Amino acid sequence: MSKKIVALLLSLLVVPALSACGSTNNSTAGSSTSSSIASQTSTAGSEKVKVSVTFDAMKEFTEAVGKDRVEVSTIIPDGTEPHDFEPKAQDLTGLSSAQVFVYSGFGMESWADQAVKAANNKNLVAVEASKGATPIQNTDADEIKEHGQYDPHIWISLKGAETEAENIRDGLIKADPASADYFKQNCDDFVSQLESLYSEYNTKFQAAQNKSFVTGHAAFAYLCRDFGLEQNSVEDVFAEGEPSAQKLAGLVDYCKKNNVKTIFVEDMVSPAVSQTLADQVGAKVEQIYTIESNEDDKTYLDRMKSNLSEIYESLAQ
Image (cartoon, rainbow, N blue to C red; front, top):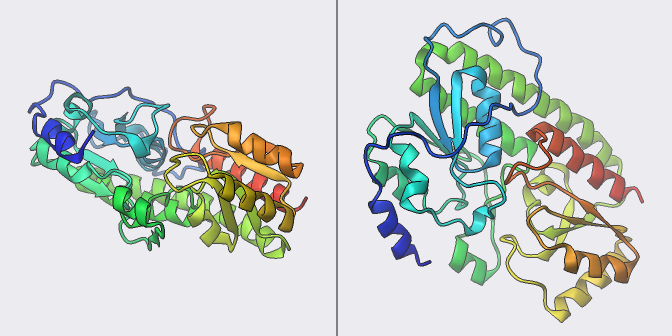
């Protein structure tokens, strides 16, 4: 579907909408040690802040900060590849009644600005969660032409998650100033958990001699930047297309040269090529999480712990 058609569909968004789109999920992004502020029953009234988010990681961060004072609906359905998602008008009707709209940015949701305009909701607080983070540039000319100049996967980074949670905190405070202390404390608790996990694995990765791993698609550049690692991938940043025979041969050489014994595969990427590569180099295939959809009913922190543990173990082989 062309961008012109997407824009036309967005322009047909009905205002106002009767209800927020998507289903509400009340799970939180990781268990946290709540302070007395975070454990209080809401004093800002019985109305929860209505938040529309684009995909699962944004839901996780929003619920970590907002907890029981937010009602979150997700625009991109679980199991849908967010890179390929092109919203129809009915997907976005919830923005007309939402108080906050959270999207990641860096080109992940190229339709976000147009969606906000089409909603015509003067009270809507739009939060670009990646604002203030340093983007990683795409280097492939075709990817830049199709998707933009940046790698969008900032949320698969503990440091990136801190930035995104803090921007979401600020957006929630704008929508519900009376709950400012509550949102701040929840955000501080969540960031503390992210920092603790970062410190644990930074020590481990700095001591590791091998720094290279192979994934199904190149979604882990920001995680690599956090810890000084190097990824190579079967598919590109946007999980488009199988590798050529030449690239596959290059991956085989790379795996042998770097003693790669694990090939990681993501939930929405075909495992067939990864398995073929693994077979050729005597490696095993293991799951790794991109946190674009709900995966195994695990929280953000659970999935990041699993990712870091699996990557570290693969480097130690």
